[in-house]
Length: 430
Image (cartoon, rainbow, N blue to C red; front, side, top):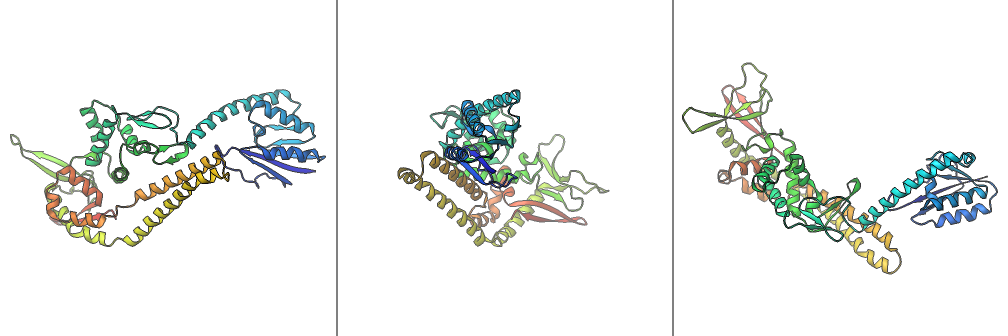
């Protein structure tokens, strides 16, 4: 008695299965990838054997249509082959139960219809065409790619520019509603900020991304800055991320470990206001006292100007450069392979579909490497640190601009109290 196993894999939809995962000792494995040449060899070999058990995962692997599946199944059983299906309720021994077989064939027919739809989507992916569905706001569908919609793209561009300037998602949402009467939710705004389409990329199932498929609305540098701002804001309390004051969300009390919030005090019949930082939920008795906001701001600027260049100088830039160079070399190697595919197709070494599949995998790998590269700190961090270590630089900024730079470098500011005095401990991000 011989035990054979047969698998068919569509490279557009699935990976090649493990050959050792049958749970039987198999005398021969027939494995087809895209075409069914090995299936024909299996039929030839079964004709010369008297007793054959054939293991399969699913009956639909025998053909692309219900007629092909039925004909080939009947042909195998006519030769005396015992068909055992591991993922469906079917073996040749109970094939006389026509009702069960009929239900299974109807199920196969539905699955093949779904498979043809998925194959169509997969072929579109190989051509870097957009996935099914409505184009994101700011784009419309063209011939096989997204095309910028000139009537709506300025709205999206303005949204990104506002966020880059003020690092406030809620503020950018309010800005669109006020200037363009375009009302979106904060959740939609966050999706815009992370949507690969606005960066010139196309995203598919399972998070696979192909870069440079159409004209972007924001540049790569802007996209990397947006990602850094989102990561930075995620460390802050939700309302502090868009608060107007530059120290909001950064300061904690060293005594009670409570976040300190900005409070505003005014006097009756006077326009002047006084700002203080006070603990939000102090558990001590008596409670930790409030501290004038302007004094904390002034000391923060002094500490940043003194300590930031030293903190940046202590970073391991050679190691950072080595990581960037390694990622850059990996991207260059993948791009070089990508450029060789047309020549391999012309010489017949690769058929057109295999070349498209290989190109798709290379482009998704390149996109993943580029995403890793974008998460690294900017190379000019030392020069930026030197520029912001000048006190006058901070004094010339607005509160919103100071907020942007503080959160770019500072993880936390701790107020250390000493009797009636206090001092600051500034903790940098790196």
